Image 1 (cartoon, rainbow, N blue to C red):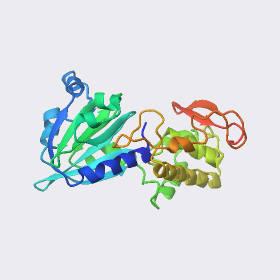
Image 2 (cartoon, rainbow, N blue to C red):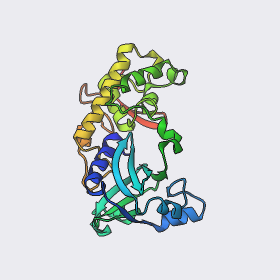
Image 3 (cartoon, rainbow, N blue to C red):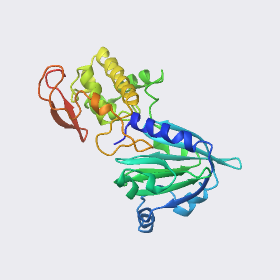
Image 4 (cartoon, one colour):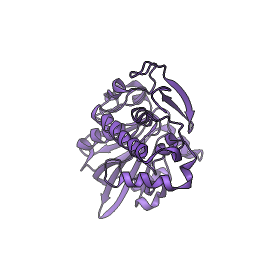
Length: 290
């Protein structure tokens, strides 16, 4: 699943070509149409397809931002402002091309689901191999309450005290620290890969109960979460399976992973172990992480 660094690079790839452009038309794939027709929401959530077109076509993209693992397109027409909120799910991605054939990765070319035709002649294409992603058109963030619950960006000064405040809540006191930092209400944008990497660098076992961390350990965890997310952005994200940039290129963070899907600890030489925590496979070193 694309995490904060991957989504950041998708946003950066989109912005130079889509920002300031008018959306002339919106085209849906047969799978999206079939999903709506059978009362299943495929990609386009919370709105009928013709209504989505009504509140998207002829609107101008005024600003594009990333919030946690979401990409937000601020759009406007005749003074009316709306927001397109997109989550990439497990294997979604945006591509900016002149024509569909320009998407070089065949799976993404084949599994396109929404095309936004821009007035500069470009196509902003949302593709999703597994169809777990979503795009919502809302008048305001208040119309999507779960979005408002996202923690501050981990690079903001408010993020650390916000994260530390969650240790006083009963919700996570008897749950693993790994589960806690995966919650975007606690730390925004930290998914499984970067949580594993941060806990390895902090020397903390992913199953350790949150209440048993010392104050120093709590701070260290956050420090390394922020560090690995920054590294992920620096190296263009982690391209282990499906993730691609908006131009189809891949990131290289996978070359810098210390524990996630690794076989041997690079520090002590112990075998890396795997344990399911919070329904996710956690990779850790049993020697280095306590």
